[in-house]
Image (cartoon, rainbow, N blue to C red; front, side, top):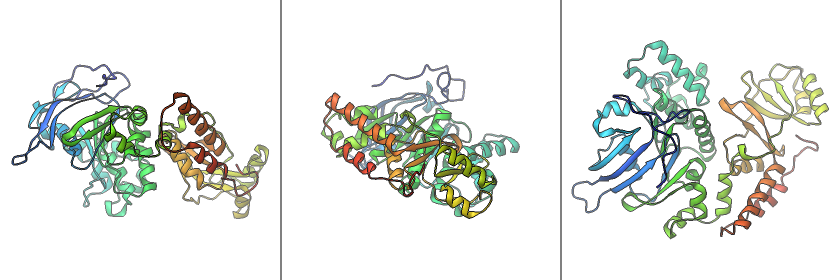
Amino acid sequence: MPDRSATQTAPSPGSLASGGEGVSGAAIDLVGVTKAYPGQGAPAVDSISLQVPAGEIVMLVGPSGCGKTTTLKMINRLIEPTSGTITIGGRDVLSLDGDELRREIGYVIQAGGLFPHMSVAKNVGIVPGMLGWDRRRIAERTDELLELVGLDPRRYRDRFPRELSGGQQQRVGVARALAADPPVLLMDEPFGAVDPITRQRLQDELLSIQDELHKTIVCVTHDFDEAVKLGDRIVVLGEGARVVQYDTPAEVLSHPADSFVGDFVGSGAALKALTLVRVDDLDGLEQTTTARVGEPVADVAARARAAQDAAAVVLDDRNRPLRWVWVRQLEEEGERVGDRADDLPTVGRRSTLNDALDAMLGSSYGGVVVTGRRDGYEGVLFVQTAIEAVQTSRRRESREATPVAGNDDDTARALEDTRPVEEGAA
């Protein structure tokens, strides 16, 4: 069982204590926790013991019916345990009033679980309102959190859930869960109801938020790739929530505890290992010519020619990328850079190399735009840098002689076939 990663401070009366300096999350300990239902031969959860370090993301994976969601719901007592102890930040949750406990724990479910008759702002502010915050403080917190999850408050605070896409609803659900600044965030299949592209963006958003807030997050998922991408640690559960393996994603991938875990890892483990490499880990994030909305196109073209760039990234007034466009196309559009936005694929600094490769394969510019906090432009990751990272990963695996399925060389060859449509493209 892993040790806790942060020194715990003494809990204050009636609250859940957070971790040490720089960590706003709190450690969670489950000791011998069991949930048995009358009339059933075996417990749904049979004496699970688990330590979740403060400020980390721990992913619960396992087959349907193994007790993942039951375990999650016992942490905030949506389901009452039959026996055992659960502590958060050193405080026994069974000693707290259930409603008060849940106001101190964020909870995110599929499709956000928003109240349809309430605006976005009222959905986000519901828990602070229950805690007695004044209107001004709630409004400020709501706008802050909408910014954090990538939604412009001016555009979205007064909308209703029916006016939002599935991905936007899920972002509001995350904002609502964070509204009262809880030390713990519980997530039950949070991205399972959205399309793959939106799911990737929401995953990246969660990692970006976690970089900023350092909450303790426990997340249930059926998607092992998602567990590898998001988790600091992965819990593979068997029937009755038996802990089969609890370790880092790298260890679960390279050293499955048994054939049961190996089946979850599945084939193509070498390609899954690309999920362990973040854009942040790569040396080679480059700068290309950028253009601001309203700027004279002639100035942009002059900078691009000087830098030998054939394309430029257009940024809005908040430094967010709107599109990546050929300079000659900008010159044909008018004298000043317009504010038109394309469906521009981007990846965050905490995105995986696997996500970056997917985005590059659909790009005609030979790379992908990288964003940082609050979706601000950071630079560009080009194909050659990704190829070198794949080859380095492959050489490392060969040195370690770890048997894996799949072949990263195939990925490298596929990428080498990706060429910018226009000669000299950025």
